[in-house]
Image (cartoon, rainbow, N blue to C red; front, side, top):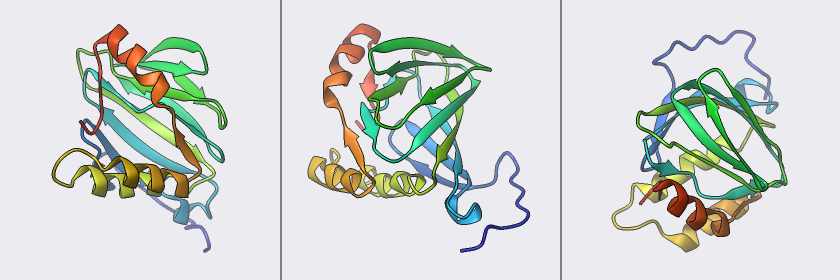
Length: 167
């Protein structure tokens, strides 16, 4: 598919999905960039943790717009305040969270594009009644070369008083 020559997105434009404590707005998708990158805006509730994971095929870059996020990349833990950039390279386990007290907003750049579609599929899993279906989550993740690393979660949840999105 050919990339769109001109694309303008205002602050409130874009498809929105909810992942139970993490809201995503699609700003620029892979079909608009010939698959080279995608950009999403994310809003994370205070006290929420993204499940630990790694990507085989994508690099992610986060720019903190508002608030702050905690980040674990490999075995390095750091805090990123508004105005900070964070690089989350493929093949390295990582996660991030909102230590609070306010919502944190980030711009997420994903390259190459395609992984943004994972968020759409997750929203369908998280919007179902009851707790998320772990088998369906794992199978969906595998389709995107995405591997959950639950071993990263409990130490961070205990240390920072966090709970996973979707719960």
